[in-house]
Image (tube, rainbow over the protein chains, first blue to last red):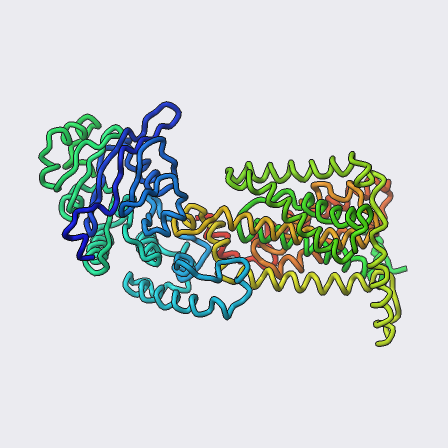
Length: 267
Length: 324
């Protein structure tokens, strides 16, 4: 996308998003942009509203005010499946491997536009055989990239926690997303796997031109791997910018100290 | 007399062909009925407690069209299914967006509303006196099947034509549902059962799929309703009590959650036990023996859950994966 590298139009734009739960303001007019092909980290102390914001952006929660634009198109108020099909795909903090389905079925499920998913065509195998075969090829390729080929025929529920994270990432890629929203992708993952996940994420950006927005608590990771950091506190966006600048911002330090920790120790 | 004296069971009924025809007719009816519950509960993970209500809507719809509106029996069979689908949409549209337990309660409430309406709207449904007079076309067809059977040397027998038709319908329905479940469409249903939010995040309109699953179950309930309506020749609200839906769940649990072969075998087994226990001979009143039959079914079910929790055809591994 050469046009986008010259023009700074954000791929994802969050404009004054507000969400209240029974009088409690979880997200309070949050605004920020995500540049195309960037890795943007969303950080903040517990209760800052990051997860709620994620849910509003991905359509799982309806916001009370504000707009979300995907490549300039408004997506606020749309259903999660519509937003996912438009190219904004999320993963969850607690992995959602579909346990009693095979790893391959997890992947095939995510392939978009399979005519066999329509009730009226499901019995007409010749109509969807080709789409199914193409999806299978892509699924096996991706499983290979993520080192899960050997487990393709196993129930996803038999995977280890780390393998589930990999599966979830691979599965999201089946949708050919433009932007991936990763909710704490490294939570509960050991160091080796965390490194491998980060390598995958960097490679996705480099090789597929993917844009990534992630919620992450590990400050080392945030500082080392993201281009832009967005800091939230008490439902508001405190500041955003390059990691080094954000780290020095006294307001950020204060927000974390106020929550009982410094950014350095907030892991 | 062949008698297992201690148990008080006369087993000579086992050599009676009519006993088996009756078991077959009922088992195929319950089988088609439970296919829908299996699709909803075992495959989609939505708890439809209103299957008896959908059965009532479909069969009463057919009966009323034939008796009161003079619609042809064959056309009424098609329209009854459409009415049942409309009922499924009516129940599903507001309630399938709700949490799973609210959906379950809504379907149960719907089922009871249908039964009370059938009981009280005498002018339309015949109330508790029942609705009859819709079987003429079937009687003619049944006679023709008898003729065909006689030509190949089978003596006519009461309900045998219905059994053959029911068997064909059950096998066809089970095959269609099985093929659907194994298609990409069925894969989406299974994903909804596993984790609806995950399916949504992968671009699936889960609400639409749940509606389709419920509508298909309701269609199957309507067909099962026709089988019942023809078998007993009279539709009465008492035929559609919620316990019917409970039987459907027993069949699904017996056969194994998610298994369609299990539905066929489970319904045969349940109906056999229910019918065979009619022949219990104990020094008890009839009412007590009737209660004892259900206790036996309950004991069989409990033993199954203890010793084979996955059901006859279920996979134990799937149970342990869910428990993780």
